[in-house]
Length: 226
Picture 1 (cartoon, one colour):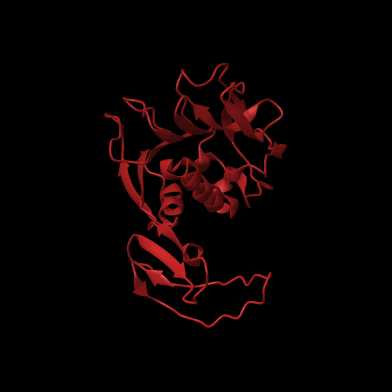
Picture 2 (cartoon, helix red, strand yellow):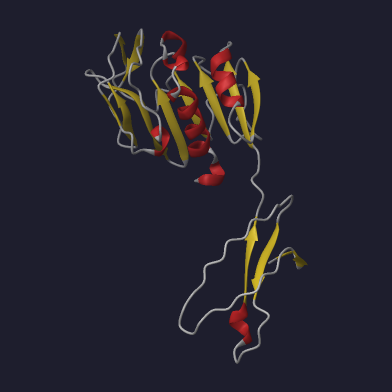
């Protein structure tokens, strides 16, 4: 095993004819590079004795949190590995230099063109039939969706929430009897996660599913993973 032609590990192999022998290597990596494995034994076909793969280091996910102050949300975002978080009280440009924007109960001066997690705020271009409901119970959620992986919403209680009809570009992730509470989808080339309620008007931040959901959202909204 080599990294950029620098030898990392060797091991002897004896493989009977017609059989295979899976090999697992663990190697530290501090920069982008090319990992190569090669067999040094001599045979009639040298070209298949070598294989290589480009290995890129994970890049930081640059997130802009637009909020008037939400310590629990900020803590959940900072807990996600490889996140570089910046904060602001408004969005007055197109958020250049950030991978996605989190709008926390703040209607921005300029709506972001990139991926966005919108909490208790909605653009008129996204949804129709928006209305407010009081104490909506959660009756169902799509646990198979990447955003809700390992996140159970049992015992999550909400004081009030915005609801809307599910648009053609989105799927309903969390449902109340009246309408969806959380939507996600892709509008044009923009990925959007919409949460209808202010998370501080619920007990969700006190449940383990909240930081799990935020971590899933970071992964889903990161343009590098699209």
